[in-house]
Length: 328
Image 1: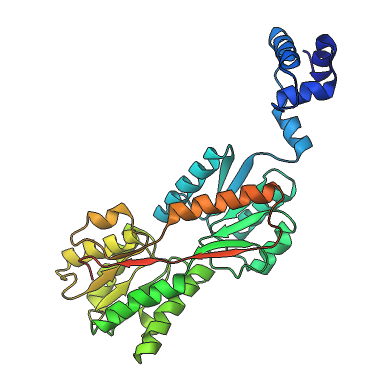
Image 2 (image 1 turned 180 degrees about the horizontal axis):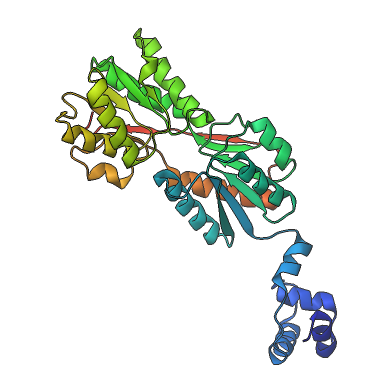
């Protein structure tokens, strides 16, 4: 089996010239390029892309960390990020942590071994200082999670502001017994949403009930289970800020089975503006933000950093939009 040295010798050129032909470098004459390509074809020479990537210190591969792929939001996020990477000639590897800290740490170790050019962190159980200690001088960009931006790049929605706006909408309707749903209340993102929920109450001078803050509610099934519980033991609740449109859909399903009229007896607001919000009866009031735009922005930013641009961390915050439909 021939190697690059054999191709150079047979072609009568230097090894560096063959390397330039392989990498499609412009500083090679047409005659020389055709001669080398002819020899490569004649001897069935296939360049070792892994070795070339190692020499260049680039893998053209970006890792994405999420808790689990079957979560509707993360499924959508991975779709847009992977498409943006693909359009730039980069591959993606999706790591599901299943909310396990050690699994998350193992991906950071792979980054340190140069198995990836960068990590896109969409979910974490670790504080940002600890994440920074594992990733050190490597490229990591957080999206979805609300970190400070002091230690690494962050692309996120202003979760606190948009939840405060949605909560205020319900309070302005005279609804004062509101519930809040989170999928992981300890995460920075969910804490930001909860802060928005509490701030809206504080600004209106209305007390919120801590017993109406529910954790580990993330799916349609979770919404149904929570709804059945609320409509049996907490019929006084008159509004719910749910963590996703899927949870909201489950709540609406339970409300229908329990003869609760939405929104006459109970207002429900979802999150993500997923297509499911359009097919429930009533349609789900929800929160939308430019997930596709954010995905393209952060992938472009990563590629610029791989190329050596932008050394200091940045934080880019996107504004959400409250969409008032018939469930509220």
